[in-house]
Amino acid sequence: MTSRKEPQKLGSILEGVLSQRGYLSVCREGQIRERWTQIVGERVAAVSECRGVENGILYVRVPSAAWRQEISFLKQRILSRIRTETQCRTVKDIVFC
Image 1: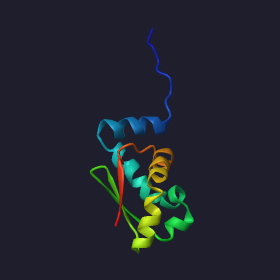
Image 2 (image 1 turned 90 degrees about the vertical axis):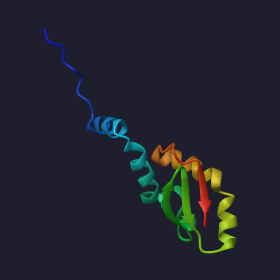
Image 3 (image 1 turned 60 degrees about the vertical axis):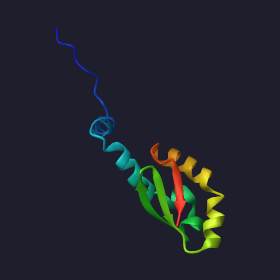
């Protein structure tokens, strides 16, 4: 008698393949840019631009020193929201530039 495997959801199969090949973290980092407004809210998203992740650092462009200072107070909250919204665990810090 042959044992049959239970059917798996396509999403979990895809996640497994991406993870095995090392692309899962890249995909999750890409979701940060896609979901930037959801992560930081409309007010902050209106004055910032998520530039991308490099070596665990998220780079965010902000138009002025005053906004950089204000948004820097939100850094821990933003990191927490990134983890919740995207399941991305590779971002360790944010640089506002």
